[in-house]
Length: 80
Image (cartoon, rainbow, N blue to C red; front, side):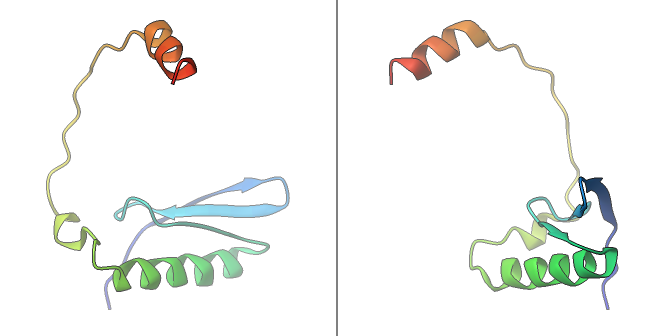
């Protein structure tokens, strides 16, 4: 059995969480136990998808700071 880290927080009365090691696997539940089951289901459904990036889970993650002119991006989006 593979182990993952469940990162979770409270949003009003809901537990919301994600799998730290698998980007894109999020879920919620009324209880922490519900969240755990729901996030497991979300992971299983993602693994059924042909486009899953499972081999990349162990790939190194890099960060790069980039500049973005927000005003021109928003203007371009508004004119879209």
